[in-house]
Length: 238
Image (cartoon, rainbow, N blue to C red; front, side):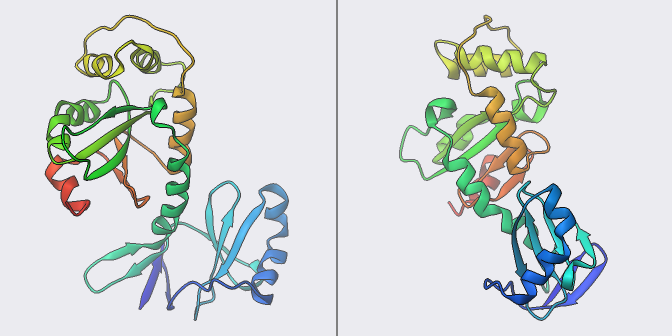
């Protein structure tokens, strides 16, 4: 099988899970980086001159033997009919762990009337057009058994009007109704309380949110953008 990375092509089979002298040599070669950002793991890519280097910052780099050269970018497997982003897949487990730390009480949840067949986390912004489109169709998702757990990601930052609106919606006596009204462009009363909005914004950055809406599946896969309910259900195997 072939692996492709930003112009670099190599023949390989898999990642080696066992560290050894070669990995130690890469660590030593990357000492200058390690002094600035701690290195979490160095993993050999079998039958390849590349090593996957995971930094404590969450970034993934690829290094040659002894750390003489570094590559930054996503590593792809070239399958017969598609490209598989292996760098992205390697982030899935980290996302599962991060999202597991979110308490339901810190989110705004829209649940099916019947059994929950799947749950998704959606990083959302009050004012983004496609966030509003997704929420306008929230009944389509819940009718298919999909529970939607909203987390805040005010794209304009923590000093923005969108941030203020989200805080007011979260702190309202009926957060679901307030969020719905806000996403319809209606005014809602200002409200303040201890809230997780800033923490969720930081979490979104950690898991790789670059725009809204961004949907995190139970597998840890990040699905950027608006996805119609039927299409999302198909991705979830419902």
